[in-house]
Image (cartoon, rainbow, N blue to C red):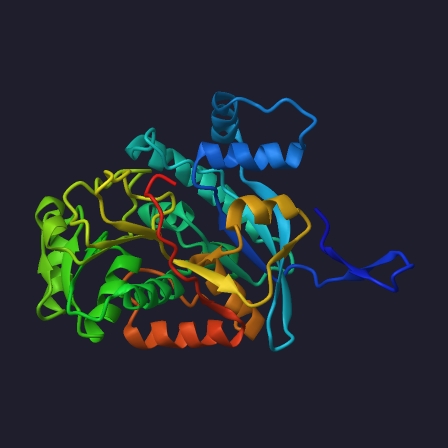
Length: 360
């Protein structure tokens, strides 16, 4: 992949298109698609309609064997006039029904390889998307130290965006918000933000100790098992690192709103009378994302972008090449408000919620 990408700009109606050089990448983003089905769609789009599509089983085997690699360049434009180019590194992580402790441990080597791919000459900030940050935290990796450049998880903007989407989804009445995955960095940060806005919280997760410690700092918050919290919930936010469909929605009231910020989505398909459901934790850009591989934009972002990746892009547009989000427990309402305002200055806003079935 070259160090520049080109954007075609039309001249006079009768003249040819000319190529406008864009800056070499100053940022990198590490991510992965949500499922083998998503990779299959992407592969089919890039191969074109003239070739026989690969089977889902073939794609699944291929993705699990691929090494992390640069896939494309992304161009992000700000209403301020700032423009940056970021190289996108796909880590090829499939957090599905086959995911487990053994797979998570095996993913560490893959994530470390993605870190090395991202830390190429000229790159000053790397953003960790999806399970690349979770795996790194699991293994206690410190890529900023190891590679001598800033790595950010994007968790502060993610928590801030989800909080705004929760507030937008409220019907005005007092309600109980259940956060599944509350002990994690995004989950705990989200709880601090929502608590500062006066909402009653139920904290759900796999580790009682961290949940109890968090609840002790949030007066009125309570730790619950998911089966007990689900029927009490007015809003459910799924930010856990569950595999695809790992959280059942059967016990959630039909009047409730489920916001699924998992990547892949955490929710199992609801029944016909199940709760309202929307994907969360995504942003929309004032200027459409550009790429030297347009199929990536079509299959990956669908007009939106995950907030974790957008944090690094907003920081780079601002000229702040720093590890804004790193470690666990540093997301405060004040830091969330700051990164939300910085992103908005560059045309990066919380995406509107779109209600649809959980298995869409």
